[in-house]
Image (cartoon, rainbow, N blue to C red; front, side):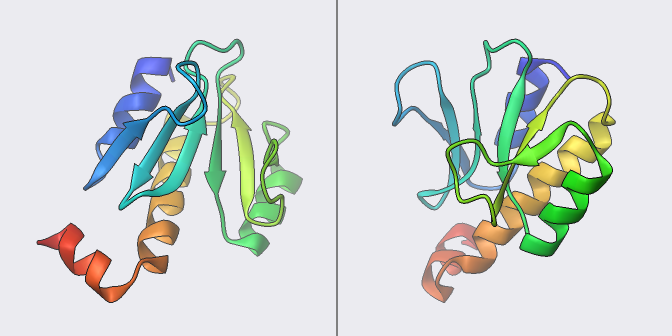
Length: 117
């Protein structure tokens, strides 16, 4: 997965926007103002931090060397995924979608309705 493909996968989700609250190098992808992905698209190797269910986060870390506790994030709820080819593109996209879904699920009813409307 290339940096452009990563960005497209994040922005393909309904209501997703790219923001730069930490400076121009860190792309932060949000839905309804809540973060679901953080990456430095110019970084080598490319990596993305994604929200995860705590139990799933642990099992992903145990099963894949490219998945580790979230860098500078709550390690219970966030994983940092190195995109080095060891994980399929489909798996990375599914982790992005899961992160997005967790954030949408945490929104208020009014926020979800506004997102859907």
